[in-house]
Image 1: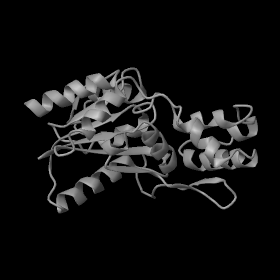
Image 2: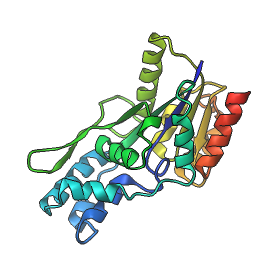
Image 3: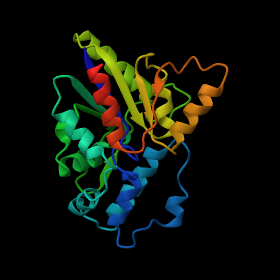
Image 4: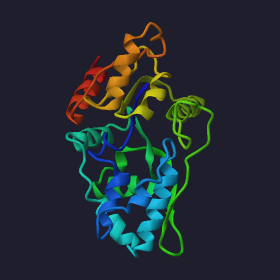
Length: 243
């Protein structure tokens, strides 16, 4: 029986939004208003496609994009937490489920030497085309009305758990670590002995508190433990492994 760690990425593993951090590679470090105002709620990935197109139009090279992305700061204690996970792979599996993209996450983890901690990343596929422009695609389509059109994290987590079970891997405990509104949906498939860990002061913590205060809070069975640094998550993880 292994432990599964599930991480969101932006404002969780890293202490910023990788999709907005990329704007630092522009000479002006800002987007034109017409592009900023083109975002529609729930359609972030399509918006990021336009942003990366604009970056390509400004003749920013793929190497310049990468070198800027590699400077994004990790959240306090996350390096320690991921290092511990990478040193205990016989008992801990670790996945990232994020609305960022494959290239950003891969670059950031590799630059920090932390890629060994993460078994799989579920996020929007990205690649550079022949013109040197980054193209970002939606991760999947789904029929969940609570989630952005390109990614339902609950669907991803349920499918992962099912596929692992088919291969004989069962998890004694699942930890779900996140911060945002799109991290609420996957918490409903956690069990009573699992742990959902919202970042203190962020949207997920507030939404979970609202849910607990409602009459119909049956959709949240997992224990809620808020955190402000990766060290607190690490202590919770270590305690559960010893119990």
